[in-house]
Length: 225
Image (cartoon, rainbow, N blue to C red; front, side, top):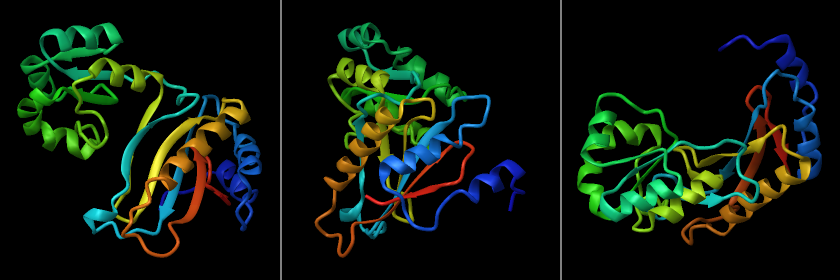
């Protein structure tokens, strides 16, 4: 286990054993803003699902009300008119065979990968590279689409993807510590509401079992929602 710093241990002592309401949890989390950079805020929701069952997976994407405080680098696999509209919408790089070769050669300097349906034959073999990094285009996440301009603009505006991990926890970026408290609250509530709306019919018992907020260099703060 990595040794915890004196600063981190001092912050841990401020975290209560019982969950806080969202407003108070944000106030506490913002008090942890003691670094020289604007820390990323993440949410972790432990869900009452069986991750081994395909009909209980929780996955998707959401445009947060106030973005995530970062301009995401977006690449698009497209040709012809679709390539032109993707470029006009603000994609950082657009291509086909040339882009596939660049990625095969090890280039992964981007946050989101989008593809038109006709390009999946080219993109499919890149799954071994893109999949483990969460960058593989997916119809379910909305990153395989004929409307590339719309999706590029959404990700540039702060759209986040999520997928439960093998333990049934969903993680996502919901902003930065430098955000106003109200904007953080809006983003977090929007994400929670979205996850609640995705409850699988096959899931039994309590759906949302616990919620924690944390920043890049802070302990988690339990939230009662």
